[in-house]
Every structure is written in C-alpha cells, then in structure tokens.
Length: 324
Image (tube, rainbow, N blue to C red; front, side, top):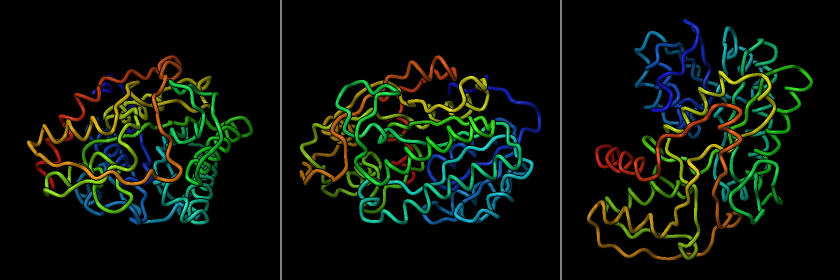
C-alpha cells in the first residue's frame, strides 16, 4: 500500500472532513485498519451515506453530520483531534463555472473555518486537499510547484486561495499546514453518476451498462491519473512530515501521463466491449494536458507512490464490476 510502515502514537485521533466522499471514506478506512481513531465530518451534500454506515459499528469511528460553513460545527469537530485531513469541498470545474458563489462559500469559507478551528484546538497537523487545477494555463510539462499560470475556473481559484490561507495560518499562527495538489484521483467508491462524474468511473459505468460514452474534446487530452492508494499514503505521510515542510503545497500523483482515448480503449478491451465513443465539445475551464513532477513531495514529505496507473486500473475495474 505504501503506508504500512507509517506509524503514529497509540490513540492518535484523526478528523476527516468530507469523510463520506470518495477520498474521505478511503482515508477513514485506512486509518481504522491501522488501529487509530477517526471522526468523520460530512453534510452528505455530495458524500454518500453508505460510506458512513459501513463504519458505524466500528468502535474507533465517529460521525458528525454537519457543514464546514458553520464555524461552531468545525470547532466541535476539531476537539481532541491530533490530525485534520480536510477533504470536504465541492469538486468539478464545469459546475464551479455555473455556481461561483456557492464554491466560494463552501471551498473557501469552509476551509477558513476549518483552519481556524484547527488553530483554536491546537491540532498538530492540518493536511488539506488542493488540486492540479491551480496550474491553470501554464503550458509546460511536467507541472512543478511554483510555476503556475492563470487560473481558469472558480474551482481552481478556491483551491489556490486555500493554499494561500494555509500558508498564512502556518506563518502567522504556527499551524503546520500541508497542501496536497491531487492529480486526477481514481479508484474504489468514486461516484460514476451525474453530469459531473469523473471520467474513469463514468466510462466504466457506461461500458458495463452497454451505453455509448461521450468523450469531451478529441480524446487526445492527457492526465496524470493517480490511484487512491497513493493519495492515502500522501495524507498519512504529511501528518508525519517535519514542520520545515509546512506551509507549502505538493504535487500528489504517480508522475505518469495517460491519454483519454487510450484509457477508453483499454477499458473497452478489459470489459470485452466493442462500443465506439461519441466526441463532444471541450469542457470549459479544462486544461489540455497534465503531468506532475513529484520530486518536491518525495523530498519534503517522504511521498513514495507505489501504485502505477496500470496496477490501479486493474483494481478499479474489478471493484466496479462487483459493485455497479
């Protein structure tokens, strides 16, 4: 997994915001499997209640149904907690273009509430989800921290703002903050439903249902698809990172590059489906290519991803075959 040897003090207590979501529920599961306590905070607006119910009988799991837009809820959720893994947010670049005010409210004000609550409760480490979208229109590959372009969507702007607030909370108040710029995370429990679904679960669902998928653009856009196990490792390693590494944001990826049309063809082959996709218009605000340089994360937070795209996609296919 890449995090078997990541050991914390006995009785370490984690708060996972957005713990009913795709990444959050996987973090909760990993923490419980390692024998530590976890509290999940989620308002279930985009999270799935099933991702809470599966852990409710576990003695080390606690659930608060609440909203990060409410400071009192955040303060309550941070009580007694050692580590905050802040995943709660609204995702999707296209949806943010339609609803910029809501994204500001949830992603920026909600994160600021969590930073303040963590500070007031003397949390040891505050690890939060950022995004590769902060690179905007910067054309060079691979993407390197400190070389960002113009922001292309409200979603990306909220993530960039989060990074600035986290940096300030580190320099002004001494809160150890670590930003994780996720690159196209995929894996078990990722939602395949709806207009804003991520591309891999969406393709899998449509192919398994013998539907004709639509690829936005020409299919020649590329992404650094990152399996969920690598993201879990990054979150746990960040909780053990030195204070010298705090206040920065790090690329979290495998460091590879896959083209959408190749992924579609690979999934079709694996599922033995002979379906030709439809090509639709490009999605507004999307970047054409993404590929991460992960050397800074390796150096500063000891991030060592072990799951390649090929290894991860096999596991993902098996999971969706069983669960869709």
